[in-house]
Length: 227
Image (cartoon, rainbow, N blue to C red; front, top):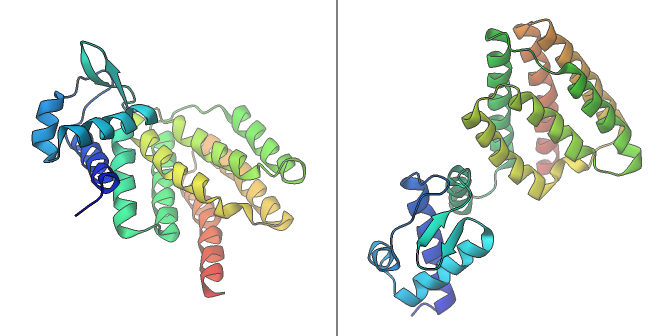
């Protein structure tokens, strides 16, 4: 027989999947406790404990006399992605490939739609990224901020959300923090070239830079796996 904790873990995952599959939005009301018991096929006590966990994580809010409500609308994709990773495992090379696809797509949107970017903001982030290598070891954070900002300029909320989900897993593993000064200098130069390519609306050049930039990371991961 499964222990209470195991049943609660299962109920939490089922509840996350239920929320994601039914596309509940920020402020939407969830079904009653009784209905969730029927939907999840577990006891009322287990459902209550699962709800308590999701409340602590900030996904839902329980209002006395009113019911349960979604509080973070952008977590649906994140929850599905998390479930996928639990089943299939964390594959950093696949995440890098997805990241490359997202960023290439974002740059295409920016150039084809002639969206004006804040180039000075990107240059400032790139400078901070370079300078942080010797100062704070937070260069991975600033590198991520640089790439996230490019995607944010598209104003495509679905693309932005997908990018943030991928970013969460990079942040958790922090694999790209083991680099040397030469790597930082190459990335800094590629960032600068990318900004210029986007400003000049040169899609081919921008894509070449991104491919080169992220391919180096993939090669680095492959080298680590062989050791």
